[in-house]
Length: 242
Length: 219
Image (tube, rainbow over all chains, first blue to last red; front, side):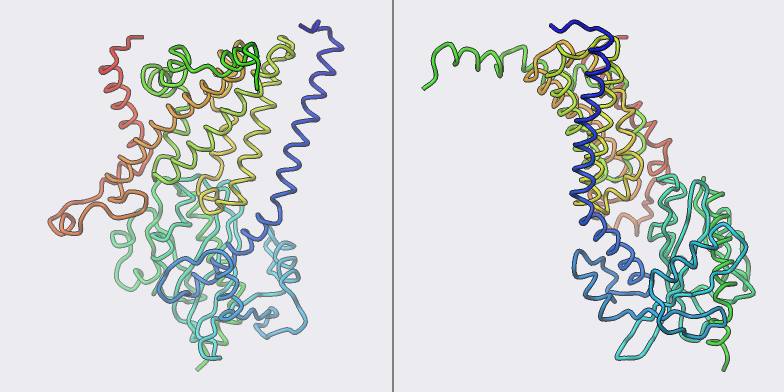
């Protein structure tokens, strides 16, 4: 039985902390490559599913995600006028969006993810970012080539409350956006309750059901959709020109 | 060839007699950490919407609890009583981070849906409770059994609550549809309440009642 002197306590606590931190560091570093691959695939799968890929609506696993992404998705980076710019990378547009996060400014580079069927772009996914109740929201919104309709969305809400705000990442919520009208002047609204009860006539095409108990996440989502439409308005208006 | 003395020592180290059986199985029913001791209720309410999440959560808790019990038990004679709580918390917190990292690497989707709750195992009263009440006073093998028993006790309740909530609330079990389409055609509806937190409270309350009636437990 050791004698529990103050010195002993300090040495023991220090030793335990040292050993534990070694264990934690080893796990974090050793597993990092796999975790990063998972995160990258997660983003790619979200872009794919916003674009309606794979066609049967299934969720791909592992390297199948990368293969389909490489084969079917092309990333184009636009300037604020909606014109493609050459020589910019994913890191560049991410940095441009990070620079304006939580400000009123608009990012200078806009990524557009094109779904390619037989060599032709048939859908576009646009990136969005905003704030929920507890932390950042982001998402990919897929639209048709005429710029008139939503074809699918996927949202990321990593900090929102599971079961409440985080439900916006679930397919029952996301699927509601399919077929909603796209109009830069009239963003889709997440209503507090059932859209069918609260929106009438033409308005129904701009309304989706809210998640009960997550008004603040819904408000954040509304703001994100509105700002996304505003940011991409030049691109969408180019599409809408006859 | 082991000498008789070594054999006896091994036997006493990993014996599995009546006492050990009690350590392992008691927490699963008679002394269940959730329904009898009412510990770890927060996560039992939060991650029981779907069975697969509940299973992963239970496995995560079992592995943290078993390792923390064994580690604390091995260190029990070296841990200064005055700083024992912080030492136990440090051990538990490190194990939880490691489990979280492993989930993020191997079960990414489930780790995403469990989100904060794996991290919150750190504050799960079962862990600190077992470390303080059992592992600090018992050898590693017994602490191991105690950890498995209590972890399973927690896991069983989690999976039962999750199974009921998923079947009643979503009509599925492990993601497969179990309520036949014909029932919906005849006007059956999923019980939305079960998906929300009040559903978990009600079910857990009913389980506590049933269990205490069966075992005759009185506060």
